Image (cartoon, rainbow, N blue to C red; front, side, top):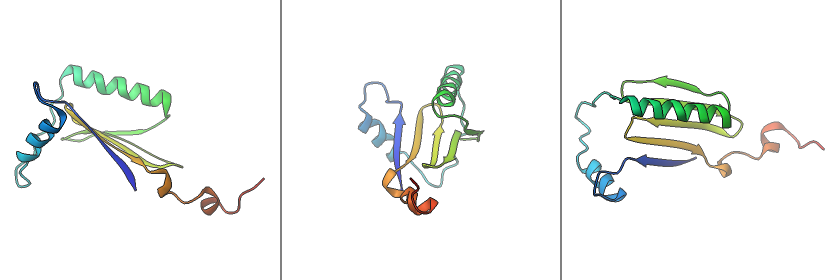
Amino acid sequence: MTYDIMFLRVLPGRAFDETLEEINSAYDPDAELKPMNLTGEQRADWDRLMQRILRKVGPVTTEEFPYSLTLWRDGPAGHLQLDYDGDSANIEIPYPGALPDRRDRDGPARR
C-alpha cells in the first residue's frame, strides 16, 4: 500500500482542482500520448531534484521514458517511485503500516 501524491503545474488563473478537472475532462484513453518535451529549465529542475535526493536518500535508479523521467528505489521501507513530465509529478511512497513488523521480516527481535 502506498501514499500516492500528485504535483501539478496549475494553469494560469485556475485553482489546482480546476486544473485537474480540465485535464481529466480532456483525457481520452484511446488517444496517442504526446512524448515528453522538457524545456531546459524543466531538465535543470529534474537535475537539481536528483542531486537533492542523492544527498538525502542515497543511490536511486533513474530512467528516461518517452513520456516521463522516472526515479525509483527499493529498500527496507519499501518501493519509492517518482515520475516527472515537466508539468506534473507523481510519487508513490510506502505506507508505513503496510509493511510487516521488522520482527516478522527478520525473525525474532534480538536484544
